[in-house]
Amino acid sequence: MDETIKILREQIILCSRLPELLDELIKIMRENSPEVQEPIRKIETVMRELSENEKKAQTFLKRVKAKNFSEYLAAQKKNIQRDMAEKLLKKSAEVQSRIKTQSEELKMLLQNGKKFVEFNLNILSKTSASETYGNRAQRDSQRTRRIFDANV
Image: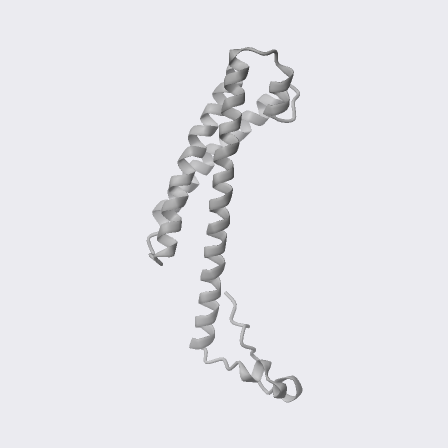
């Protein structure tokens, strides 16, 4: 049980760092600042440590023949350590839920950025929308390049 608590504590500590790092990255992306390298480097470091923690957790779960910590804890007798581990598991789930929400927001920001780049590439290449989407374009367009062929 001590090993379970140790793994879960480490996981919570690492997961607790991610929301503030993701908030920092979201703020930078909203401001269109080019300074994204440092927050990404920090996030990558935490993610590597989380990966190592996950390997420890999977090794432990294989050894005790359980699919996940919930199943393992349910099989243990009621005591203070089990209660502590259950609280840690619940807190871990809450933090992971927050991280998931932030990840979805980052995904949306990245998609918007991609669309912005595509739009500007089309403007810079002077691609005309009328030859691509007009009635005439469907019949006899001479252009070999369409408006959204300039995808990154």
